[in-house]
Every structure is written in C-alpha cells, then in structure tokens.
Image (cartoon, rainbow, N blue to C red; front, side):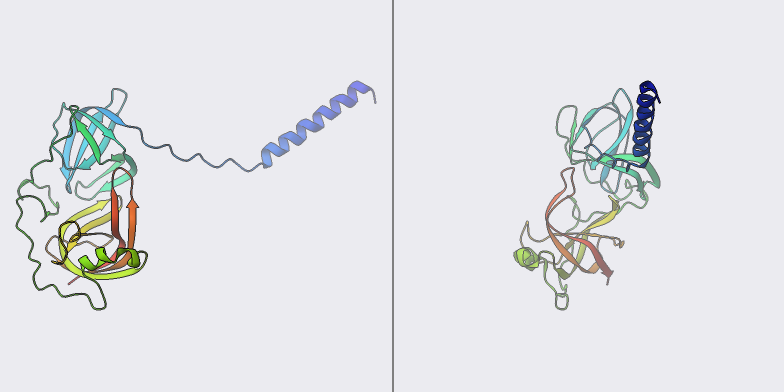
Length: 248
C-alpha cells in the first residue's frame, strides 16, 4: 500500500473513532435556569386575588404577568418588579385561570415609588372564592379566648421561645386561623394564633395542602423549619411546612 493510501486510511479510522465517541458520549446536563431578571414597563391589565395583585406588564418587547402582595396600581402606571421568582404553569384557583408563567415578587415600585398597600376591600369587592383575611386593618379582632393547648403540644409563644431546640422536629399547636391564602407557590398558607405571645411572637405561619378558612380552630402538626427563604423577598425566621391541618 502506498504512503498516501496509508495516511488516508489512518484519517478515516480516526474520523470513525471520533464519530463513534461523539455518538456514545453522554449528553451534557441541562444548564440551570437563570435567575429571573427585573421586569419593568407599563401596566396593561391588573386584578386582585387571594390578597395578591396581578399585573400584566408591557416591557416594550413582550407582555409578562407579575404578582406581589396586594398593592395599589392602575392601568397605565409604570411598574418595576425586582427579585422575582418564576412560577410556570401556575394555576390560580381564585381566578380559575392557568398562567403560562407568573413572576412572584416582594419588591415592586409603582411610578418610581414604593406603592401604598391597598385598603382592605369589603366583602362585596372580593372576587368569588377570595378568602377573608381577618388580620387586615379594620377587621374585627379574632376571638382567641378558650383555645385549648394541643395534647403534648406547644403554644405559639412556646414555639417561638424554644425554636432552636424544636428546629427540625414535629410540633403540635392548636389555634385560630387569622389569615388564609390559597395555592401560592403550590401551597395553602395560613396564619395561626392562640392568644399567647406578644407582637412578633404571637403569629405562626403554616403551609399545607389542607384548605381552611379564617375563623376556623385547627390542630396543626408538622416540622418546624428555621430561616426559610423562598426567594422573592419571602423570608421566614420560622415556619411549619407541609403541615397536617385538622379543622376542629
């Protein structure tokens, strides 16, 4: 065999080996999703649901849905949404609507200023199915009298006081629901009080798959988690996650 033929054969062999390696090589792992960028533009649509305000923002390139704890805004306002967390295929039961994506945030400005929280709506203003929030300004103070301690459980104040020792352990607490938000980030959120504790240590946040309503007396059992950061400005010193909630 002549030298040119030997060289050509070697090139073909190497090319074949390279091609086989390319075929058999494991596919690269998908890149991690990039953090959501800040969203800014004009509001072209807005609505309130479950104590959240939804805004459809025209950024000039596309229209994007964003949501934050209820705030005052109107069509035509300029908004900027920062530190947002994208929720794809998000289903709002209150609105009976599925969004391709909603950017949830705790940091919103309206017309270059922090918005003044919207006044608590009357019952007739609330969308159908909207949970009444007993702890909003102007609402009657919840009746916290006569709430019995959970058997072998803790009071809300005791959970705050003993949070370091209780972290990661199951707790049991009975109290009254003073606030309820349905299906935020795929979970129901409730605030529980039992009459114990002072301001800052008298209100316990709980996530659960169970539905309850403001005014219910409930027994909550679940693990206590400290320093929980859900992103978008939602940080909790302590929270009971994925709890079992029994309405009593």
